[in-house]
Image (cartoon, rainbow, N blue to C red; front, side, top):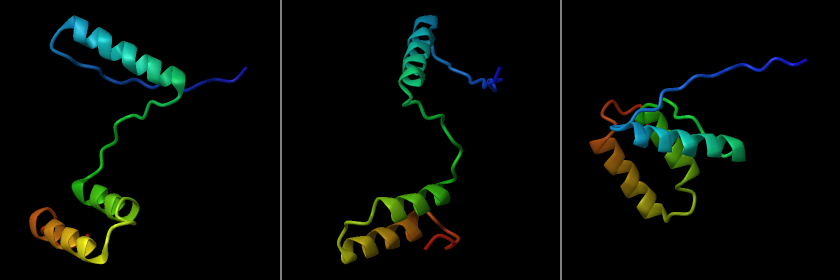
Length: 81
């Protein structure tokens, strides 16, 4: 007999009906195998993922522009770019 590890999450909403609806949606997603639990990434970590995985088909000048804008307005310490 295999033991499974139980995970707990919190679902919140303004009304009980809203929470019930969200719970039904999450339960259905889990049943379909498409549910992804929210993770706690920093903006810098997400920018690394986004620039590596999502900017593969942009023109070089567009990539340069995005990197400059992110460095100027989002990442202030310069560790990402």
